[in-house]
Image 1 (cartoon, rainbow, N blue to C red):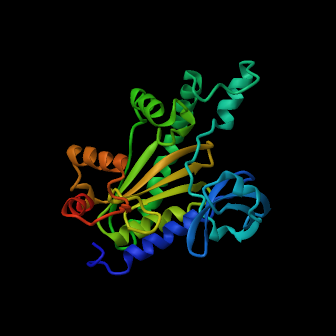
Image 2: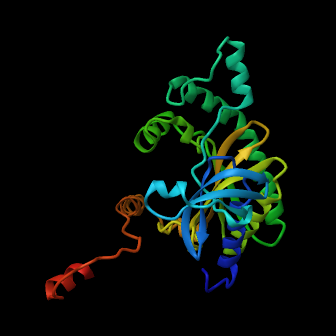
Image 3: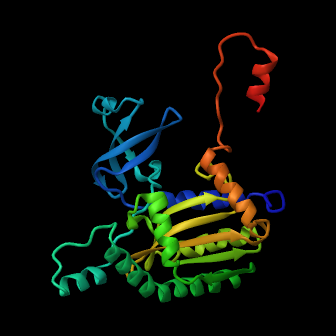
Length: 291
């Protein structure tokens, strides 16, 4: 695909980086920065302005080094804060709780919290459909083609299994109860969809982006063939998921391939690895390293 449409993968990666650098940060937010070209963990200690932050970097594995590293000031565009987004109950849901006499929100691991999230997700579906229609109108009149599908709400058993298996039962991590997918016939269509979503910032805010398509530094090694965004619906206060995929790559997927990809991700088989060895370089050592 990259050879057939030169420059488009780089354009998609650039748009993804633009999304990555817009979400406001709060004091205590854990982020990643680069020091002398190397990625370094850091924490926000002061918000100078929406585009400027004081950070405390951790320059080593010892947490005590956080106390001795001097703070540094960076522009928002230089900070990678693409951390996992937590779902929050909408103002409407909190108002319903207060009307029933509740003084505090329910525990994020409770069934009541999950039911309120589902109510928020259901109220958000018409807004998701509206975003789909806006994007398709902008993209399909520009000479490229894509299709948009709003999925039904995630099934409750699937949501519970995901929360218990991956997030220790914390339902705040469920940001895909409401979701939709754009299937694009070309990389140019993917770039057009991302730009069209960016134009809807008055009503929809991109909170995080997961680039599993371009091979950019932040892209995941699964080769999944899509870009996934967590998008905040300003009309309801609920976060939903948008996938922007290449149709040709989706057709290559199957349940068996998906299971293999999940296993490879769990075992970190696609990540670079280093083997240290002391002693003679025998045939057995060479075979073990080669494997």
